[in-house]
Length: 201
Image 1 (cartoon, rainbow, N blue to C red):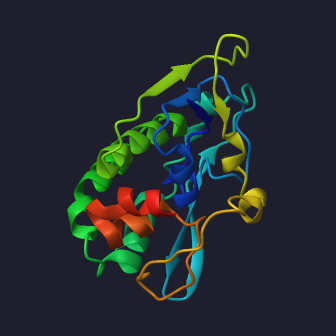
Image 2 (tube, rainbow, N blue to C red):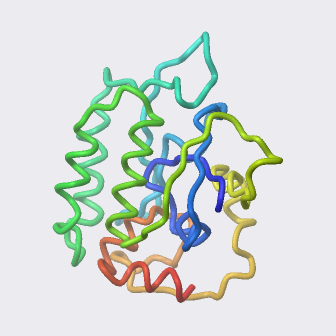
Image 3 (spheres, helix red, strand yellow):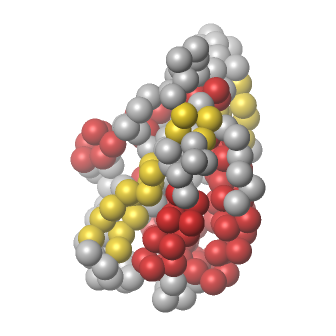
């Protein structure tokens, strides 16, 4: 089992780390700004950039599960347009697009719930049969798990997977392979082979 934070369209690193492990999500964890909880790194014609979900400031609770999404900004259409612009011509974009659009347009109130549903959907796309377990606070003496929460910190991007075998795939724009970009990049290019590719890294 591995303990991870829910992220917005998590990175290739994230799914490589999960691999075949069951996943634990702590619904009682604190929300930390400027992490991948509300942002995702994708690649476009002009290089890498972030899709960021705006959130409503909460003065009474810092719990991740209490953070609400700010729909006063038209971020859903902006994100969908960015994905269309970046990946619309990739081989498998059309196969996954509709379900991703449906999830985003469900207008979840809480960021935690959106990211949970997206993770479940991405597991389906990847043919992962990992179980996802929500817990309310960590009880170290009762759970035996690997701690993967460091994956949520963009500061650690360069420190992760230093021993990972270098590999690459034909990225849509010919950019350098980056384990820290969203799994969507790999999924739209490799489709059903994405899981096998993760195992080869």
